[in-house]
Amino acid sequence: MAWKTAWENTATKIGDIDAYMKFYSEDFQAKGYTKKSWRRNKALKNKRKAWIKVEIANIRIAGERPDGPLNVTFSQKYRSSNYQDQTEKTLVVLRENGGWKITGLR
Image (cartoon, rainbow, N blue to C red; front, side, top):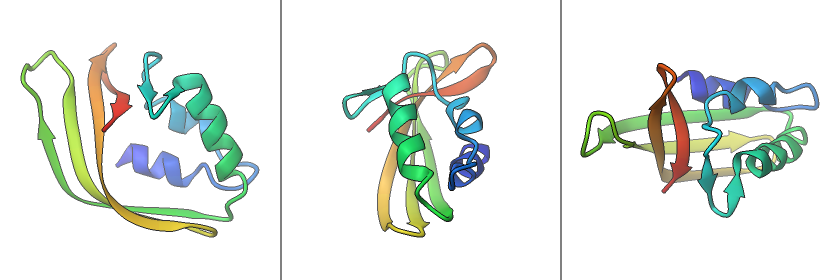
């Protein structure tokens, strides 16, 4: 839920993209993005938004090994001042330095 809140707080020109990006691994790769290019893309898009609201439900966690990556799947309802959608999302997370970091999306 802290990731969701950090994402919501990236809206506007003074949005806090740094807090949001702390949830992402340095090794993040998804949809053709690296962590650096994901940050740039999100910062550019989200500073144009007056607000962002994200609702998450039906969270499911699956993984084959306790020390390996986990898939966190959930229903997501995204709304902002200029876009909205509803989708099923899967984050791939891995334990790094005592915390969970997002390494990819499925």
